[in-house]
Length: 328
Image 1 (cartoon, rainbow, N blue to C red):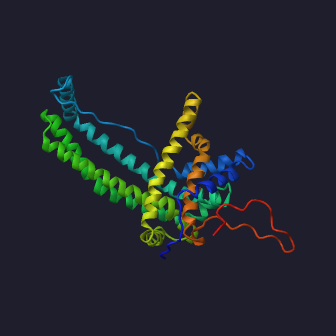
Image 2 (cartoon, rainbow, N blue to C red):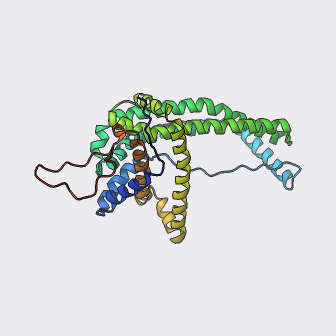
């Protein structure tokens, strides 16, 4: 299906998404509802997290370079002399890590549909969506598993080459122009692949999951429909991705401000598993609602929110606010 609506905006979903957060969590406030929906949100985002790291390299000619070279030689000798237990330990840790990753991916795939169910229908349910969307959740899990394996096939060799290049220069104690150039090319290739797989994952969660939720179809079928939509609206979805960066920066800034204002107390609470998700529930529902409202702009058939209830015969239409997302 190829749809090209007359008007699609990346800013218009903001207002209804905020309104939906207010309606779902604060009108009225229900702590029990927060914890139930928070559990679904926590399950949906299992295994996700940020990474903050860096790498610095000092050449042997720089101040402190001799100490770095001596430390590197000591580490290398230690590893080479203890391979008999380091290799089995590393293999065991990798196997355990992969098993844990597979389990978390399966749970979060099921949780994605549970969270959409709670957000779209304004319900605090766990058991019902867990069973209702088992087929769709398992299909999403298999897609993500295959996507991860494909990413590993492409990214692992680059990581090995990057590690070898760094080890080669550190072992020789010199930084050659050819080695630096090769390292830059490898890093750029790694970044490009990371962005490509990241976009696929982003579109899967933001758009394919809602399509699967509506059509009760498998992941590849949902991707087929989304691909037809993206193919005729490529620049709109590109703008969506760019605006997601802006939203992420704004939300991140607000969270940092709250942490600073509370003297890091909020930061400590947010670091607690599950409890942190419950506290961040307004943000999580907003981001989930935003993508749902954006997708709904491409037609009523992409709107996961139910239409407003029709008034009973002989009764005047309700004066209550229209359910967000009900407009075609």
